Length: 469
Ligand code: SAH
Ligand code: SF4
Ligand code: F3S
Image (cartoon, rainbow, N blue to C red; front, top):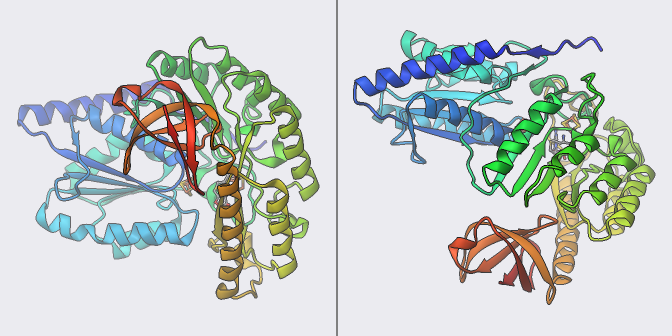
């Protein structure tokens, strides 16, 4: 492979930490306690990145706020996966002129996947003067340095050069939750699905070293985390770029061997690389959650080929069959794109029939959004937006009905759940997740947060279950 892995030396991260310490000392000596807001769009990978940003910001001596009018530093961590995600970011960033008018010291940074798109970086430069600092995902490890440069020079800083991607270990993390934790195991993507912007903005696939991932998993378990989600755009190809001789299934098994009461989840598993070994390992590892998110995207072989997905309907259905044979209680979820360029009514009917056949517990459905620079954005796309909307609505209606039927099947059963937070659902003040990841609303004592409990399911709808401890 032509791609050369770029590992950031530990000394470089130490240097970033030193910059944080200097900023902190300066703030302390002037008696200031500024506040920061980190606003995150997009996927769990971005959530994990924001935890590292908050880790740095905490070391810099800042406190945190949710109110943009109180903030002295706002970091917007963006997503580029669909046009809608970008429009929302631009709208919200544009509106920050008001906060800046009130607080001229406010520093606004935009980072993440959208910032890495040259067109968007250009747009931010020209039309969004409120933004002081723009950097892509590959520069995140040196946020303290970039912040300090923007602050001290009072000049706008843009760091968005093309990059195949870095691996940086040892960043500080300020985790957002005490029960559930994200654990990135790899970055980037090599798949180049024809509709998708991710490989362009996140760079090539690179796995974190096996021992580094294991060490972090051990730390999380020791710190009391009960639900650990392994993250990557395509976790099934974990390890292929390393010469360590471990694949994703080996990683699951090694984490499963860590003593403690916790669950292992993972996102996202590409059907192209989902192996029998993976399903067998899941079935054999008692800590591995009985849930697999297996994005199918389409039920039509013709469309799957045009999407460059490298599997067909038959292979996908065989994987589903095998997963269910080995784990009869497995929860299956998926992503589907409606209205891919050239998709016909028959193709869409194939997607509907696949959904009827698999009967997913939950589905995430999207209308195709052309992303400049991807092959699909240049394909003829004759179907109107209105027609795509009709297909979309039909699919969502079926998906919701199936989810509701599946959830109704839980009523009367007693299931083990992990209580993971406080809810605001009328009577139900707690939220929990089943082993398969289904949301359960509960009534009970706050002290149960972080505990595994047996609950009786009393009700269910499309989105959630209701239960009693
Ligand atoms: N790596 C994951 C997906 C990450 S993006 C995987 O391969 O499964 C999350 C979802 O966004 C995708 O599964 C796809 O359904 C959707 N998506 C990506 N690009 C899109 C586009 N251009 N238009 C509409 N939906 C898109
Ligand atoms: Fe995008 Fe495909 Fe990579 Fe997923 S596997 S991130 S959909 S290119
Ligand atoms: Fe969006 Fe980037 Fe994730 S494009 S979906 S935030 S990898």
